[in-house]
Length: 225
Image (cartoon, rainbow, N blue to C red; front, side):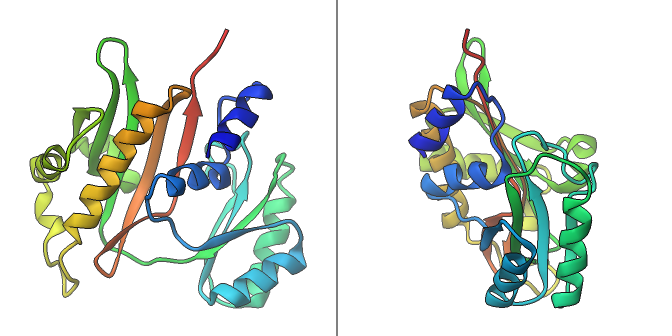
């Protein structure tokens, strides 16, 4: 994790690619979806076969924070033909990529968001709430100043208005609260000890069975003069 951040700082980069961002949060103990970075079409096909279909392909770049709007995200790819076409379409966009992420496709009806920001007065703050495309519209989120305790994380989970989504839902099991608590505490610890990090946006966090999984992440570093 430190090497990724220091390398970005040395190059004057403030935004980490999704691949690097996920490595940073995974190193802190957060679960991310299984994926690998492909540097060629053949490599993408091999990784997809290894992971198992369906898969998702995403262009990975520190200059592509808004991948969906740029046409760099292809979902629900069911076979090798789909993967090959998706790879060609992503790489044809002309974006400066460090590769194409090939990852497992997790289907979930429950989407949450976790994040970290730095308040000028209070310092690093952890955020949790309802995620997905409706995060900004619903604005059902809660905050705590980092570092946070397990008790703080438990309170955050219960504070959101739609906390019932964490229980058994449409035949799906209740979310593993202990795993969610560990993830929030780890996120707070990461922000507290890593002064270079300005923001972390993990959206969405999907529920795979009962386990919270980060399927997208963005780490932004502080601006150093």
